Image: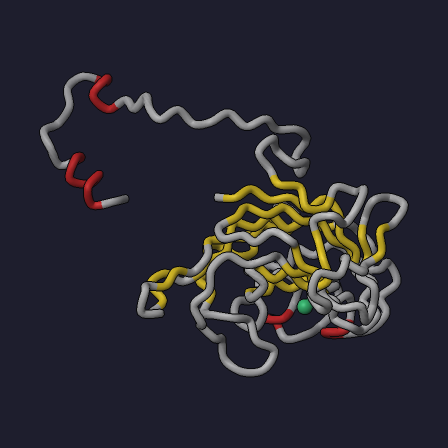
Length: 240
Ligand code: MG
């Protein structure tokens, strides 16, 4: 609660119920459909028809080289590199669905490894973690190398899974000092696995998190370059 609002609560005790009613601003109406489908004010990033919202992260301006399947899902094309959204974002609510291959192809970090990088810098891990041991801050739902998931809500290999993410971007002052860390709340298949987790900086494979000031950034999907076979579908977000 803001200080200003708190002060208001310390003024004379209201005696009329109307004194504590708030009528404006009226929350905007948003149309909704089935759970998981994009609400009316969403930006749809993967619509089952094309990869128009995406481009190659490896080759500047090149089309996203991943595989568009007949069912509208998209599969990582091994070795083709990451893909990123053409549009850049700050604070968002993100819905994303992903799937590992039905037959696991490997173990540990090489079993269905992909990832979703918020602002291109902060990875929430995608991995087949149903029955697959690895370091816990690198399993599915981990904010990579920083926060393990609170529980393991993974589905068996080959089943579609969902992440619903509330992300708040970090902020810096003009001198380049971080004034607000990024935070992430994540539901994995509807289960809370990150509860307003504070992101310490970039999610590095080797080394400590880095904190260089930045503005909006793209969403990047990872090609882990190990024949992961990971697929995505139904990706949408709302800017917050
Ligand atoms: Mg990854």
